[in-house]
Image (cartoon, rainbow, N blue to C red; front, side, top):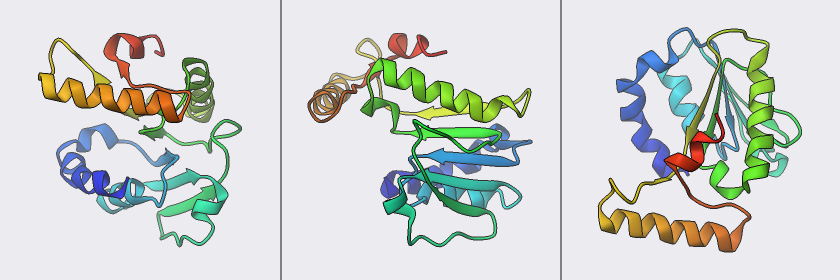
Length: 162
């Protein structure tokens, strides 16, 4: 979602320590690459790759430190120091999420210590969120269950993946 990624300009500026020592990054299911583009501009030394289905990236042009790879995240994720899953896991069942996360682990396992998988997704927290926010998240949850095999998850649900 390109519009969401524009907000990340501020986040990346304020969260530089997350990317310290990182030389490569893969944005899995990164669409047109808006998130990876923002990161590559903020960290010009970092090699950023967008992994997306071939028809989405077929005509996209990369830059010196941003490239596009057509592929299937369930089959292979290119090797990198950091793997980002932005609004990906909520579209998949728990079993499929575990398979995707295992592919992420394989992609960073050869890098030794310091590899990261960053998951950016909605988290339902009925006790801490305001009522309207919880209501909105639950609507997204119903939408994901209707359209996909996935769902929005709580913090407790997410802990089962680590």
